[in-house]
Length: 373
Image (cartoon, rainbow, N blue to C red; front, side):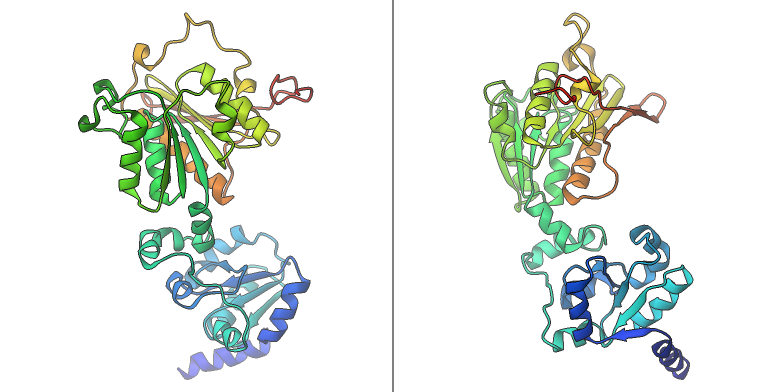
């Protein structure tokens, strides 16, 4: 104990400690200030945090901070419960090359006692905090990210092989509103891959079966059933109220309609397709990347294109591609990572290999090119 106390006293003379008032004044003046909260996720849930904090638990700082805070000269203020761990972690940061370091004296407890605002888990009830606990524990998601998901709206086009896993994972993740577009009924031939449906739903409208399944999976989710085909007359209205559109359709006409409507509305389009034992996925979001017409300027001749009914498909393959579509959708909603913009990810189940192909934007594209209206 004495050794620990001596180390702590030494760190107090070595690094600067800010009072809550000093930190509060800097928050308004320095837009690049990084508040690094090193407490555990459970502490954040029970005690709250300073608004705008970056959460990275103490034991993971050394391994992850360089990825989360790449600039070594960034002004960093560390925060813990009472100002002890936050001092010790400064020594770790200094060894990693960070130069502009300080700690909040007295930690969050002193901040709150001084009357400054503390963000809390408000907005999530106890059941939600338990349901989304693994999201809340992720520094890249946390409470703010989960709130964002609960406020987000995703349109899933097609309640079939791709739409089934996509919609299930989006609902499970807590995406607050999931729209389902489909005009078909459940048939026996669907059941080997379309996991939204079961034999008990044979003959039902797919959107009704999907709504029942998704609402049972997560009561937090509002499911909007659009029992219709995507057509030129309705596509703009269908996509208008959503943040991301996930394309699980199986025909070129629908894909082109969705592409053009999403470009006009400025909505990202997460595309996936499957063919026998192969699948592919990408994200269309001009002008940051290409659109569907950059990949396929025109549809192939009808006699060369076979749909799933004619060509067949390995039942698990849409599950994999649909899950990847859901992953890209969550990344877009949470502003995480590197989306598949300008990249086409291809999967071959027979060889169990992925291949990534560059997909550049076509300046002469009729939909998103430089001269497109």
